[in-house]
Amino acid sequence: MEATPARARAYVLCAVLGALLCLLPLPTVHAPWWAVVLLAALYAGCEQIARRRFAGTFYPVLLAAAFLLPPPAAALVPLPGALFSHVEQGSPWLRRSWRGAQLALAVWAAGSVHWALGGRNAVVASDFPYALLPALAAVLAFCLVLTVLDGGILALAERMPVRRAWRGLFLRSLAPIGVHGLAGLMMAVLWRSPYGPVAALLVLLPMGVSWWVFAQYHREHAAHQATIRALVQAVDIKDGYTRGHSERVGQASMMIARELGMDDSRVEVLRFAGILHDVGKLGVPTRLLRKDGPLTPEERRVIELHPEYGHEIVRGIAFLGEARAAVLHHHERLDGSGYPYGLLGSQIPESARVVAVADAFDAMTSTRSYRRARPVQAALAELERCAGAQFDPRMVAALMLALGRYGWRPAVTADEPADLVPPVAPVPSRPGVHR
Image 1 (cartoon, rainbow, N blue to C red):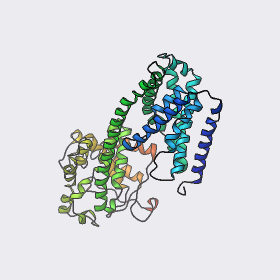
Image 2 (image 1 turned 30 degrees about the vertical axis):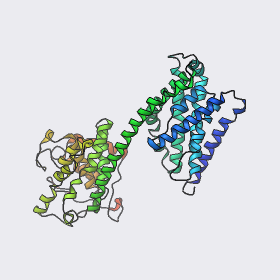
Image 3 (image 1 turned 135 degrees about the horizontal axis):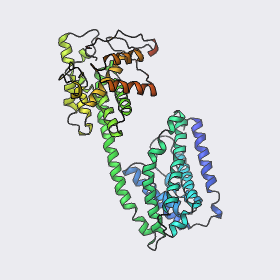
Image 4 (image 1 turned 180 degrees about the vertical axis):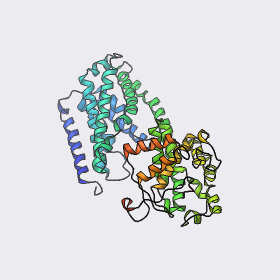
């Protein structure tokens, strides 16, 4: 309880009071209470299974309640499942109260919209396709309430900027909750049919299977992230002076990819490519990575092997896709003077051209063991100067546009703050190896 800011606790209290206001008309509501009890028990059971076996919250039962019951009665359905749910961290009753109030408000809003648009009569009469319109409006109301409440608690509890807290929440939740809403509508129609509640429960079987598949995908994605984190941590431990470089190159690569209009899956792959571009340093002697001053030609040749070492490390990781080519070729140059294979122009994979620009930009704007960081504008000027010979001009232009939109805070690993670090001398036209 102490770890939760007072303003966040006040926000939870307001949500609880709002939920209680939604329940005030219950004494005057004519509802099939056996159905309320059955749906509440069903939701509580589904929620327990979902939290232990899958991930997230099982909304079809809640939305079916919104389609079947008067709004105050529907708002009762999520309370047992939320108030007796397992909480692993934080204050259990604060979290349970928040979850119960949030879901009660969302279900009440969905039920109110559905009721106002005549959805209940459409469900009773199985009036398709008209029944879809009130259901769609109810799902939108459900999503909107969850989004507003989630964004508010993020802003208050995590001290996150308000705009950032709400950004993308509604759109991300709309598709999955829309599918749950369709399942809830099917449940409601079957519940009101001659076949009764037993037939309605059958809808949960395919939903459970699809949710299991979805949960498996998320577990696999989490395993991918854990694999990448382990590799990056190993590099950071070995070359502590560039700690954080991999994540920043991943971020810059993602910014370039988005500016180029790549789809989300490719953007994610390019982020992986940026994060893992230096994983081959695990095969380079630590004394070379941490050496103060210039490298000898022999030492340079040893460090120039790190793209091939990296490719050997990641080539068996299938989910990385074209990121593996970026790990191997991110030190190639358009004029053919790069390494390890001296590829020319379009022979260099696009992913590698993206990472090359992101890598050089962060290397120039970060302090290293052998030189100081330079200002962002100086680094961009150097990228422009080398565009066409070393770097792909499209990638350089995309990075500049992205930085113009979102800005960049260069990380400096020395003691002095970034704005006090003087610019370094320009890199030569045939730059050596940045470490």
